[in-house]
Amino acid sequence: MTELRTPAERPVVVTGASSGIGEAAARALAALGHPVVLGARRVEVCERIAGEINAAGHRAHVVPLDLAEDASVVAFAKAAEAAAGPIEVLVSNAGLVQPSEVLTAERDDFERHLAVNALGVRTLVQAIAPGMVERRRGDLVFVTSEVLRAPRPGIAAYVTSKFAVEGMIATLAMELEGTGVRVSTVRPGATFTEMGWDWDPAVTGAVYRDWQRRGLQLHDSLMAPSDVAAAITAAVGAPAGVVFRGIEVEPLAPIVEKEDGR
Ligand code: NDP
Image 1 (cartoon, rainbow, N blue to C red):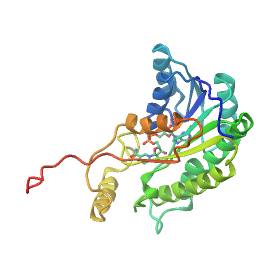
Image 2 (image 1 turned 120 degrees about the vertical axis):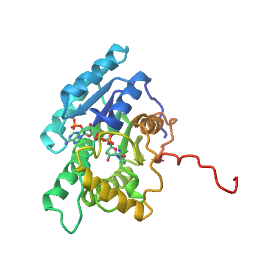
Image 3 (image 1 turned 90 degrees about the vertical axis):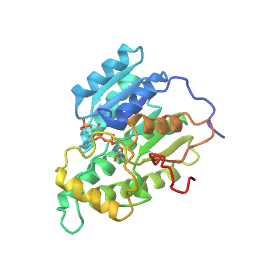
């Protein structure tokens, strides 16, 4: 049996909603009429964003979330449901990236990335997905990365954590087969957000040049967070009985005039 009943208003949880792609996804889903719960550590930033959403006539709630702490994740899921109702949509977007190399990184560098980008996601899914299974519908949308298609050096712990979480997502999708709960993955390419701005500029430059040398950075175009949010809302809005399993979103290369006039 395919999914039959999808309410017009679907309580949504967005992790990493204090900036970048998560903020844009929260705004876009709220604008579609869904009550949205914004989760992140910077509660005051989420409050400002939620205030703007509410002032525009839509509905947003804020609940503190630290994905590195299981107790915080469990409390977040409970408070989100109390605020917005049974969760219909989880946008698992929050993420952490710091420079690191396998040869020199501390164990802690890997553990921090795995804790936020993979293990915290597991705890959140365990807290939210069972209710969806019971109701026989729901959307789990995971924001991973283009590094799954093209891994790159200089961010080894990040790449490791994103492969870990995609392994988990692939397994989860099979576990949820036949429950009515949909699992989608959105893999963004380069997007202009807060990500990477706290790096030492010299390290950023070196990593970037290395990517260029390896042909991993063919042009400098960046997407806006709202571009990636469009893919997230597409996954959430997929027709009943259909799942948009994986969406790769990349900035289009700038148009160039070829010398031979093509
Ligand atoms: P931002 O740095 O702008 O946003 C990251 C978000 O994650 C923030 O809201 C931050 O909130 C939240 N976050 C970080 N650590 C934690 C934590 N411990 N607990 C809860 N929330 C946390 O980055 P983007 O918007 O770019 O990143 C969103 C997703 O997109 C990530 O998964 C990233 O890997 C992915 N992505 C981004 C790309 C890009 O080019 N920007 C490319 C490929 C993938 P706070 O600090 O308030 O907790």
